[in-house]
Length: 162
Image 1 (cartoon, rainbow, N blue to C red):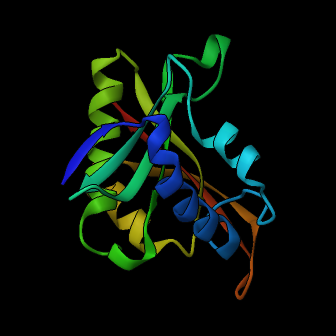
Image 2 (cartoon, rainbow, N blue to C red):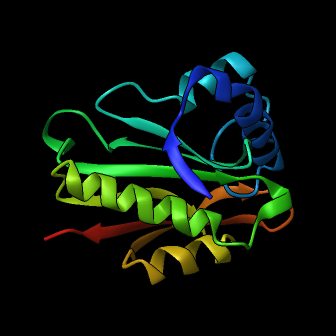
């Protein structure tokens, strides 16, 4: 598997992954009715951010986006998001994408990386983050409307690079 920068030609394989994850409405706070055009504007980062794909044999297995968490006085902290094709989840692709994003952010000189909205139900994602040194720093109770679990908490997670 190779992780490389996103190209416009990748969108045809990235969009189905984004669409499936967003429509599931169980991990992302994106509107499940997100259009393809809005998804592309949301997912494909402009500098200083970056969007990448994890590929193997020409197939996009997953994707990530990363960049400053906020503008201005918050721009020294990075953020990232990850999506993996449902057919290859559990095979280390999300872990590799997360490790890549953390390494990228360190190399860019960010002070740390913040994940703003990790649902309590995303146990696999939380395990990956914690294994890579990202800690839960707070939870907003009932902030996420899960399709089967009802209102559950959203974790704010952080990895300090200091």
